[in-house]
Length: 316
Length: 300
Image (cartoon, rainbow over all chains, first blue to last red; front, side, top):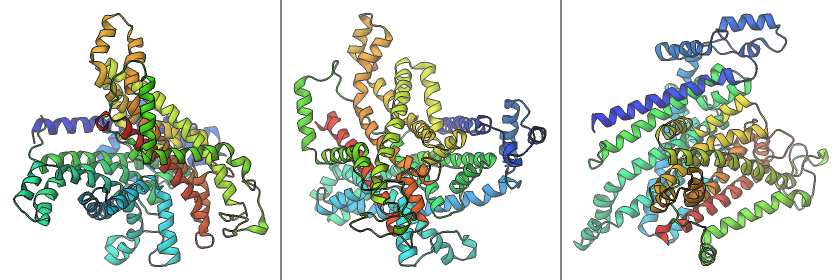
């Protein structure tokens, strides 16, 4: 990997994060009314609202407020205080970010467990019955609303069969099984959806590789199909699969936000919605900024991983 | 919500042709369209949705908001094909009425985002330089937010309600229209017919409208269909969260949110509205995918 490419990517990452921080900061000046009024309630006098605004620093010029706000986050991890509870937000973010990431990665694992076998199977016999089943599944995966999928999972596995809890979260520290039983339904909900979408791309990647001359040569040499598949096809398709995962991260992250809300999963997505419903704007800012930040960094890491995986990809 | 709609639809560009296709080309396209089973299935679903949105309300057996406490939580039957809810309202009638809400929000939201996105994309691609740089960096920033989170944030600023939901959904999908259009415009910008028009003294505005934009219509049409699918999903999600369409209006997402509280008691409340969303979304997805196949010159 050339250093120049790395620098370029990190440079544009910083630029995007700067833009993200500006937009996120803009939430408070853009909302009608003042955060001080949220804290004090509707009956507050103009004097007390003004006093709280001074206390929150909202009477200063916007650029000063922005620099102060961003400086606090970057230098001290300080997101300010919740308007509703008055507690520091950084503790909340530190609790919720790991929960969101855990859900996202478990869901991705689920998705790959679905996408890889079904994509490979359908590529082996394009147009066959299994292929059509997989493409129907994909079509449903793209079209099914993620929150409805969550409802159906709860209906089946929690309400009807009573196998798994319908909501909530148990930290991994309190034991693997309780943790697993809580993460299973939300992760499966996201995983089934993104897995059935990814299956289509895995199929495409496989077909692309199967068309190559070296596959034909391997067949001509009399290699068994199984050996060809493992040695020649899967290894070469692996690079495209990383690309697919990278592209899928966006869908995955969005679905995680929604599914967190359905399953009362204490992550950043449910934090953002609760903050919006309660008009706790600093909390919303923190949720949006940390989720977008994590998202942008994961995207960068996927991009960089191509270069490590595929020596023939050169970025100047 | 639908992030997939914000990924590029591919680099397809229609073959450069100055006026729209001749009569023969249109007929050929239509013939191929009829043979494409997925596109046809998508069209039929979209037609069904449109007819339901236009006339479904008028032919619904019950009013969508009238409560009947003698028929609370009635399971699906001949009188109530989709059952009733906690207020005894007929779910089938509510689902029929919901079609109009869904389709209206989707059409307006996608209308706004395609208009703004295409304009930005044409300007960025055609003018290049700092206009391009500035526009596309701003689009990158919008892309950095997970779609639902961006929509929720916009709703936090604008406030709840169906009108604001349209604006929020539109903003989420502006970047993808801008990117696609810009890509297509850059693809034709250096072509001979554009240079020729420029040499003939056609003004930049005229070149954009008459020579550049028509050649970007293929990808834009495909993206419009896919975005309509995602806009339906997005409206349902926002209403589900309580931010979009407000009660008692029978929005599909809202109905699912109400149904969630009674899953054990009345599972049908959590099933039929979701089914309606899925089928409608699938219609626009199939249509979009089909159009992409048909418009891709490599597959002709």
